[in-house]
Amino acid sequence: MSKKSVKDVDVKGKKVLVRCDFNVPMKDGEITDENRIMGALPTIRYLLDAGAKVTLCSHMGKPHSIFSAEVKLNKKDKKKVDAGETTKEAIIEKAKKDEPKKLTLAPVAKRLNELTGGKVTFASDVVGPDAKSKRDALKNGEAVLLENLRFHWEEEGKDEQFCKDLAYDAEIYVNDAFGTAHRSHASTAAIVEYGIVKTAVCGFLIEKELSVMAATLENPPRPFVAILGGAKVADKLNVISNLLEKCDTLIIGGGMAYTFLKAKGYEVGTSLLDEEKIDYCKQMMEKAAKSGKELVLPVDTVVTTHFPEPIDAAIETQIVPSDKIPADKMGMDIGEKTRKLYAEKIASAKAVIWNGPMGVFENPTLAKGTMAVAQALSDVYGKCTTIIGGGDSAAAVQQLGFADRVTHISTGGGASLELFEGKVLPGIACLNDK
Image (cartoon, rainbow, N blue to C red; front, side, top):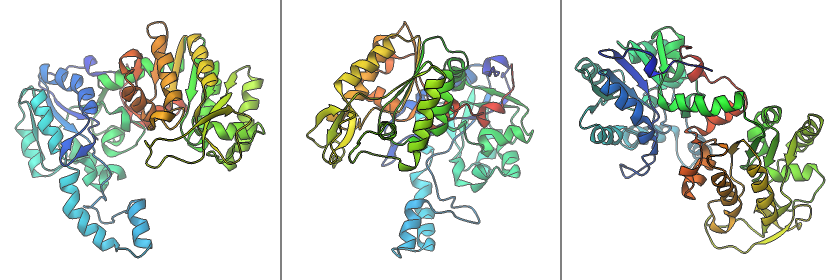
C-alpha cells in the first residue's frame, strides 16, 4: 500500500485541494478539542511553506442535508416524527436555522488562521461565489477553508457535477483525512475516481497511518498480538476473523467477551450478550485452535448489579471467576488476574494492535482493565510496535495519560477497523501509487 505523498510532487505555485478532518467537538461555538486540527497542521504548513495555493475542505457533524431536494432525518428525529412529537417539516425548518450556525467550520478557520500566522481565510460556501472568489484570490503560501461539505447532499451522494465544482481549478488533490478514508464520498474519493483531478497524493497523517499501521498489518513483527474490546461481537465480525489469520495471539475483552464466554458454555448473568453470534464465537474459537493461534478470554471479571447511572457514578463491584458470573450480575471489566495475564501477553510481543476498551472505562471504578492494558503497552514502549486503532481506545489512552508512550494512535476509528478487516479504503485506493 505504497502511495505518493505531498513530498513526492512539486506543489510550488500549484492549486492544491486538501481533504482534512476538522470534525472537531464544539460547545457554544468554541472548539473543545483541537487534536484533529493539530494533526492536520504539518501537511498544511508544508504546503504553505512550499508556496502552494491551498484550498482546505472538511465535513462537520451530520447535518440534515438541508440544501437537498430530499432531506433524510437521522434516527433520533425519525423516532420523534413516528411518535407524533413533531413533523418532518418542523425539523427541516429548525435545521435550516440552526445547522449553518452550529455546524459551520468558521471557528476552525479562525483557529487555523491563528496557528499559521494569518494565512488562512474562510469561505462561507463550498462551491458558491464566495468560495470561487477566495480561491481565485489565493497567492502562493495562502489557504482558504471552505464551509462544511455536508451542507450539500451531493458530498455523500458522490454527485459528479459537485465533484467538478469542488475541484474547480485544483491541479493536485491531497487526502489527509484518515478518519473518512473508508467513506466513498465526493471529497474523499470520487473527485479522483471520476478523473477530475489526476494527481492525488496523501498528506502526512495518512502517510503515517500507512507506514505504521497498514505496514504492521501486512508484515507484522512476531509475536504479533491483537487486542479487541468494545461492546458487541456483531460490530467486529470480520475484524475477528481477519486478525486471527494475521496475529499469533488474539485477546478479547470488553462487552464482546461475554458472548465468547457464553459460547464456552459459561453463565454470563445479565452481561451484554449477542445471542445471535454465539455460534460465530464458537467458529472463531475452532478457527484459532485449528490454525494454532491463541484466543485469550478473561479468566476473571468485575461484576456489578446494575449499569452505573450516570455513567461515572460510584458503584459497588466484586471480582468473580469468568466461569462463575452470578445470574443476577453483569460483567463490566476484566478482573485482576486477567489484567496480569493480558500484560504478560503484551510483554512477550514484538507488535501489538488494540481496538476497544476492556470495560466501561468512562467510570473510574470500571476503568482498571483498560488502564492496565494501556499501562502494559506503555511498559513495552521502544521495544515493541504498539498501535491504537482510534475510537474509544484512542480516547482512553489519551484520558489515562499514555498517549506519548505508544508508537502510533490512529486518527480514524471506523477506518482503522476496516483496515483491520482487510478492506480496501476508497480514500486511499484512489491515490497515486509510488
